[in-house]
Length: 133
Image (tube, rainbow, N blue to C red):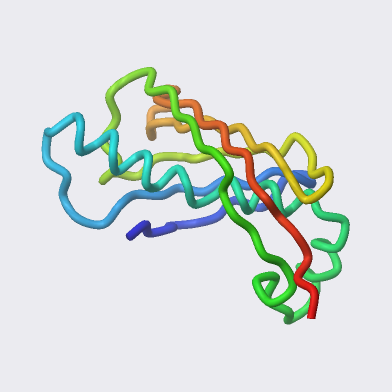
């Protein structure tokens, strides 16, 4: 499971960031740390894509849970690991959406260590549509 310490305010439409870490000790196993970072990196891209939807602002300002009005799914997810990082320690995940067209969106993001070192780059394409009842 991923623990979200604090979500930073969306600085503009299509952007979301958070300090996150996985629960539990992953030890010094680099492969396990990469797997944990990959798991955590799947948490925010859909939020960035969803924040590009024209109706998201009206929902954000109400008591409505956007999961009641929208449905989403990851279509693909790619990660480039640039440097070793400990996913069981706090890392900053910063994602931006590059638009939402026909229910499909693309988010790119970077993962940073607490010291500001860029440790990974993430790209995710997602499906994000308004539910029909």
